[in-house]
Structure formats: structure tokens, C-alpha cells
Image (cartoon, rainbow, N blue to C red; front, side, top):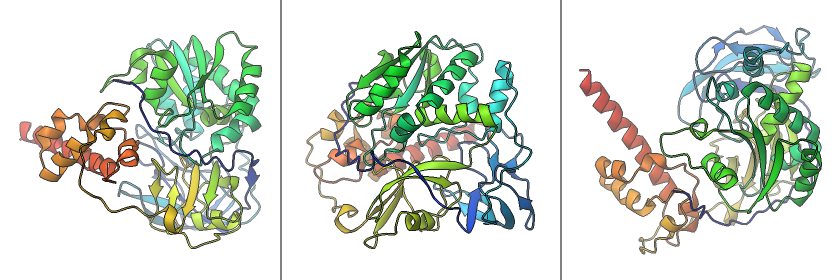
Length: 437
């Protein structure tokens, strides 16, 4: 299933040497109460309430979910509606900052002396997958009775432009290893492998120097190839194990965490300060490309201004990388927990070529990490043929974009795969409803 074909986009790691800078608190932040895969939080504040940095503003017992905290100190101005990338409408909390950035006095380091206490701490921290997926981390770490042979630390950072994880590795090295040791202790993981691509030699050196003192932690250098950081691909590259369709990493004894998630978790266990800010790579047509520490809920417009503003009018602004990131409809869109980059592209960099007829070259098949047939899926979507989509296993697509990237006809293949997956979901839902009618 995994030959790790992938593609070799230009790395464009322009900001790898840029140390992290903290941006000033914006005048206002808009914090959605759903920044994770799962149920939205219940709003715990009202307009006029005074909050501090780290105050819990969204919570509840819905499963799976994680609490949401204020990223500034100030006054709640409005409870608004926010439209997510999937089109769902959830509540958001608009807070006017007082410019003081005072932490909530109630924040203390969590008391952790058991597996249950550890999971509660991870949940209370508000941590979600910081590599982009946004899955509640406490749910992932709740391994129950399943044995964990390998804790795998995802430091591939294979998307072009993004270097925020690199800055975590070189600036917060000790926190990374403290987080690893905590996770291993409470999940029972036998070994830890840090997977890092070969285009990060400075980070490899630092990580190996620290890992040498830990007998159950090692660093493995991987080929710099996209999508090396995809969870199932990383598992295969580091362990040789294959996670088949419909299965989870735990089914093959693996647990995968992003490197920045590990560092944050260690910091939280020391301080009790929840997830209220993100390190972002800001690049493209900005005056000061770099890595910035940004309060969650800050508008993209404010982030771009902090990076010196745009040198040209951007035609496309992306949250995340150019392969799997999402183009935003407006620069008033707020920074979310699982954002790791903001890329502003102008003119030629952002324009898509017109589609032309498929030339049957099969590059989309040979470069697909899952050996799918994107061109055939494209035809099935256009024909509305759900049975063909089921046979073509469209639901296995991880939407990495390799097919669209490599296609000489510039077919919008990943978008069709996404449509095909939704067609299958709608069909299966209707079939289930008919069974119970």
C-alpha cells in the first residue's frame, strides 16, 4: 500500500533561520469555540465579562472536545457566529484586549500522579494536534489497554515554506524531550523514535545529542519528500508497519505526536498555562518573513501587519502549507489552535492554470502514497457514479495533493477526491437511514 512515492516540491524554507518573535497583543481577538475535531464547546462567558489570559471561555462534557481559553486579558464584547472551513457555523467569543496580558490567577500547574490525572491534564490544557489535524490530544493518548510499541514524534515538516516545528526543535529542545518522557510514562510506550527529514541538519544534531542520554529514544533521519509527515506514511517510514484503511495507528502498536505538541505539553505540566498562542511561519509577499508567536484568535490581517505588511497585494492567503492548507475568504479570519503558518501569495505564485484533458500518463497513480487512481475517481465524480467511487476506495484519500501537483494537465484532482468522499458519505448515510425507515 505504501511505496512512499510522493513528490518533491521546492522546499522554500526561507524562515528556517528566523528566531521566534512575539507579536504585540491585538486590540481584539475572535476565538471560535470549536477548533478541534469533535463537538463544539459550550460558551461559558457573556458580553461584559472581564477575562484574563488563560481564563476558560468554552467547556462542557461533550465527547470528543477540549476546552477553549482566552488568549488575552480584557472584556468580552460579543458572542458571534463563526463559519468553519467545513461550512459549519459555531459560536465565537470576541474579546477586547486591555493590553496587559495578565494571566488568570487561578492557573496553577496540574497535579499529575496517575494515568487518569495525566489525561485530565492534557484535556484541561486545550491541546489538539498542532500539526494541522486538530484532533483532541487527550483522546489520542487514552490508549486504554492497547500496547504501545512506538511513540513516534512527527518532525517531518514536509510542507513547503513551514518552519515553525523547526524553531520548536532548536529553541525548545529540552521541552520536547520532557514531553516525550511524560507521554511514554503514562502511555507505557516502549520506544520513541523522532522522525526528522534530512533537510534539517541543525535540528538533527541537537536532537541526537539529547537523545543519546535516553536509551529508549532515538532519532531517525528521513528523506526530504512530501508527504513524509502524513501519519500513516510516517509510521511506515519509521517502523515498516502498515496502517490499513479503516484502522488506527494503535492497531499496529504506534502512537504519533507532533513535535510542537510534545513541547507544549511539557510546558503545561510545569506551568498550568493552557494553549492560547501558536508559533506561526509567516511567508510570501510580506516585508518581514519569519516565525511569530501569535495569540489564538488574532486576525490574519493583524499577523500580516506585525510581519511588516504585504509588499504586494496578495491574491491568495493560505492558513497552513501550499499543499494541504486552506485559502481564507477574508484576512479577518482568526488564527486557530491548529494553524502553523500563514502564507500570502501574489500574482504568479497563486494562479492556477486552466485544466486540460487528461493525457492518461498515470503520474497521479504512481505518485499517490496510497496507490489510488485519482484520474478514475475524477471521472466517477463527474459521472455521479458512487459505486465506482466505492470500488476505487476514494475514502482512503488523505487529500495530500500529490496528484494535483504532479498532473501535467493541471486537473483539479484533489478537489474531486474531496467531492467523491463527500458523495460516498452522503450515500452511506442515506443507505443507513433507509435501513431504519
